[in-house]
Length: 275
Image 1 (cartoon, rainbow, N blue to C red):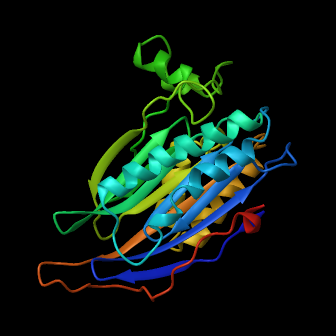
Image 2 (tube, rainbow, N blue to C red; image 1 turned 180 degrees about the vertical axis):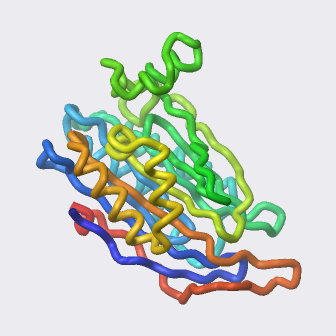
């Protein structure tokens, strides 16, 4: 198991702690997942298993957001441009060599009228969750065949995990037709915990167990490592990647941060450290 140490960062509007962990899984030798976690960007991309160079596609997708790395909140237009760049970079590279596609999910902290918000984005079946006040909410909606069956009432959610088409996704970044990413805006609030993960986690660990771990384990690094371990213990045939982000403080009306544990540290999780 590879786990990345905990990072802390304080901005005039918000203070965070975060950590990430990843593993090739129990049956694979190549990790096609890529992770980018550096204020204000927290993303996971899952290269399509079984396709040529899925790791290249996932790395290109997250690399498109590197220009957002810094010590200020992003703006929505810049995130939209990064999403378009991710699509273009993966597609352009695919014209020269057979690189396969990738999912992309996660969140970027953006400034909306002077208030920090999570801009959550998703394409594919990797997921972004929000855990707050003891409850776990899946913010993103899977772009998958089984999700469409669930929404049509033809399949119960509990049955989706074992469905033979559970790994068939309906949207991805890749050489095919471009399909839009879904986006959501949520205010960032003190006490929130964000979870970004590939389906290597959610395919093996139930939401109830994920919620229990996020509620019981205070450290983002320990929570990420334990979630990954539970997936591996369950067999994890696919790559598993997890990023956990805690909101320690948000500026109040007086403009000051309150109850922060953060220090001024900002770093990217290097992909090579995640193998």
